[in-house]
Length: 433
Image (cartoon, rainbow, N blue to C red):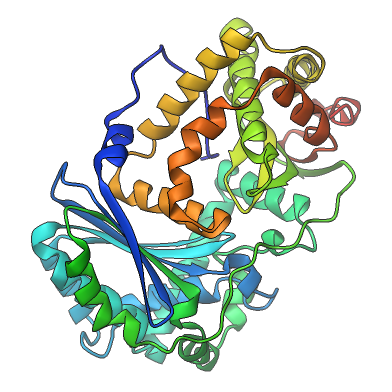
């Protein structure tokens, strides 16, 4: 589904995750070029460990889309210490959950376990990064599974619209690549190329490790020291992707006789280090709330409507709706966007909306794995994990004139993808965005 930042619900106290972050002990260390952040959270026995392989789509070319995702998925089929089915059997016995999530700025490879099984799970985790077998037959099996998943996703409206909208807005830019791969790219990647990638790109300078849970730093240091820190350091240096070229408005139509029509338009926003980053996040949240009220609650034109904000090194704002009447809906959405760009939101109303947004945001990011990524964003995007502590203050610093200014500056020339009945959509209304 589209990543949502809706303003919903009533006023609430900040959830336990915020208090836990304030009370927890967070520290960092470096070992052979490997940056490690540890946050001890004694609220439960769950421990999450993530490795963020930096670069994301900057690592890719049209022919290598999905390379890293394929490598990590194939590592589940055997490693030096855990040949073939031993990896899966050991993981199942421990009850741990592994995840591979390729994204635009990094590939997240991680696991969640309980404290009692953390060391054993870490052993499997590290060996999958350091010494995957990459047997040809097993790689082919995983390749087939990934290509099938891509075909299935393209038969689901939301994943298809998301993929097409990113490709359209970021044509000619690394964000336009599919981090999880395309069928054509996956089909062309050879096993020898995967092995070469593993031997050259699994270096500590490309890795950020974040561990959150009821585990102390010396314990993590010992595990890292005898595993991941033994990898070669390499010479990788993170840098954000280049600024995208400003595009003219556009519309891509996929004619489809679906029960409802899907419409998603994106615009590139400021970089994560720009003061306007949080202002655009707040403006998107305000617009989402107004869309929800006017389009869904009052007029019943849609069940799903929002103004998404994509949390990346270069932000992305948008408008999204699924509706049986796209033209009437677009008129209402354009009116609400005009109001945001023309009028100043009431300061007290903005304060309440910001508080509601903060509550909703942390409720959606309260697991240990979510906290790990929260810290990773601060470290990678802002250069210091401690910048995460300023998140709430940065949001509350956004004023009404900031909201109006960024709405005017960034929320125009949307590049839309439309999936639905072609004759139900007016191009003239699209061109007003």
